[in-house]
Length: 560
Ligand SMILES: Nc1nc2c(ncn2[C@@H]2O[C@H](COP(=O)(O)OP(=O)(O)OP(=O)(O)O)[C@@H](O)[C@H]2O)c(=O)[nH]1
Ligand SMILES: [Mg+2]
Image 1: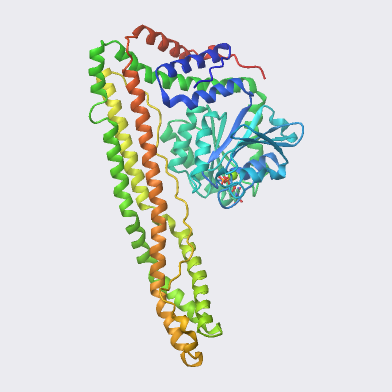
Image 2: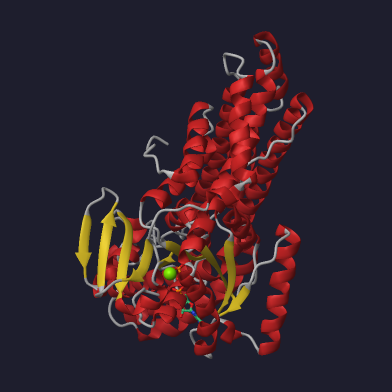
């Protein structure tokens, strides 16, 4: 919050006011939002039209289709890992901006090296963003189409990048795939986006997977659900890169061309929306400061005690959340192991035995060679089987993660309610609290490489056994080893998933605790202001109310 470069005009001074107030009253939660507004006012006045949504919703494919060129990498596994912006330029060009502000001009063919998970895993190349200029985007002049990394995939990094970027959004296109109907996280995302922009459009992608009747049904369902949950109407558009693309593109184009044509007023409208929402949130916090500043020092200390009482305190939350995390983590292994045991052990043992019976007659040579063959075959087979179970069944392993998520969310919500209730009871105001949700991401898949199943190398004595006599006995021996081998592998798989899942549970707990800490520290500093400042706070509140209620006065904006 330290870049106080002032922008003249009503919008700039509204932001200056908010920034000053937040710094003075140590309102930590709004820092990122303020920075994003400041950037919008001081950098290019381009409207960032961002496509945002769950991983694999078809975001990059959609943008490639809109720009009419396969510039962005797409795929069946999570791909996009870096924010990528596409805008009109006189000639084709691409620039990588690194986290240390270094820039690199690259060709369009090289874009993939920087923005795809495969070529730049977890952004190991430290790319902040990639800008692509294309001459044929002239009809979208003033707009910048933004591809964002998918939310909620195993690549947690991608989710964080997109969430961090959200405050910068100009217009949001929320991509929801036709094969994965609206989820709770989509609703949370839409709700969060309305804080940052007045322009949110829902885009149902991959509609070629649905019949026209099904499409209608899904659109109705979207509209009804979003209206019920968020009490607001949003346009729903359809898209497919596979069929009828021209028709869908034309519908979407109408929105984009209108945005580009009315650029000045649309840009001002978006900034106004952001600043009003910032002012509203700041006001919520300031009301608390106002109420307490009317009291004398002694009374203020007493009020603080009443608000931050024994039920609303960090240590209590820490032990409660740690307990929820610990209890669930303890059950992770048992849950996975018993699932694997009851659904996979017998069938897999039988499958491996049958396959081994078919394989062994093909193996030639002495006992030493036979044993090597057996080990190799078993290594390949078990690795493939474990990978396949991991890939297709892992959703059944996530029970404790879901329970921990529910427990932690509930506990944070109760904390929030208690804090709000105390504030209301003691100060007589209902605080406008910042939306906050416990985010959960899928854990990474473990590496399921094979472990040596033997303790004793009886094949070291291979020269003692003439194979023509003993071969069948050894084949029987190998077959007898199968059930134990399967058991060891399943138990190891359970262990590997336990590690991954428990790591995510801990991260979730830490994230929740950070929120609690920030909220308590903001409220604490609002309640602790040394001098009575009623007059000062009141005038700041009036200024903010002016911003919220008379936003029409903020129509001035930077020249394009
Ligand atoms: N049937 C059908 N498949 C599509 C469509 N659009 C995208 N896909 C497929 O969906 C998968 C994901 O596409 P991407 O464009 O990579 O999705 P994304 O949302 O950018 O994914 P991330 O970058 O990982 O978040 C690919 O296999 C695409 O071929 C569509 O309109 N119809
Ligand atoms: Mg993508």
